Image (cartoon, rainbow, N blue to C red):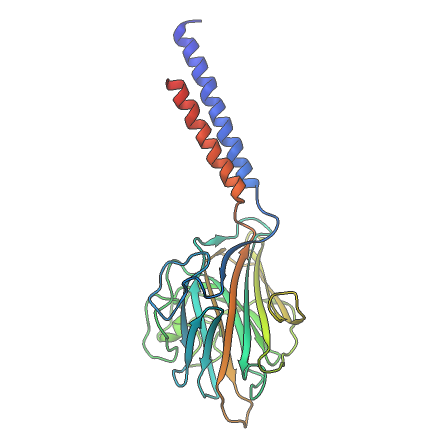
Length: 344
């Protein structure tokens, strides 16, 4: 064999070995999915999160929350370590919610069994499922694809006749609500392509109010797998609301909405409801919302309602393990080392 042919044979063997190293390493990394959930966002409001300020890029422990309300009358909000306090005005029927992008990168459900989970621990400080609250009182939470668009800065008024562009107008995703009565449901929130008012920024209440909630187009209620019970509790109770979205097929999702007594999901299950869809087309999530609608009992006067949020956490099982990512880096480092050695 000639010197040139020997060189080509060695080179071919060399680069084939490199290719095999890269292929094996990448395959191992891609198949190395964690069995348990990995936290991609955890906020106790002590790491730089803001409220009603100019949105900035979120991190794993902070973000920019924007508070939207159906009416400005008496609305209040503040943020401090361990406490995001939100108040609705002295109105018989009004809704309010916080919205934010979360985490350093979007989460995309790609394989059967992939899920994303949102948990929010909050205190029913005043007149939420107690006192003067009626059966239309509800607490809701949702997960969305923001399309890279942060919420509108500041306290958005959903009953304004202006029609803001951007913000949460084109967010799409899923939310669940827990009613004081028996109307709880899980719903798909579509992009508000036809909206002609600030209701296009609302994310959680699907035509619950003709002047405050999103409705153009309206959301689609998911097929219910179980019905929830009504909710009544003492004022000042601590709860944890949980929304989990799981990929179950090529275009199928299961959405569960639960509420537990106390901080975390280890307490008594107060409420639960499941929904499914087989027409899903978007499986990416990077936005969240949480809020409530205050609705007084008929014949009773309105009263202020207040919720104090203690923590917000997003977990998923689709993030590669750090050890797998290290294997990828090691594979490429080995490839570069072999190339340098061959050239020398």
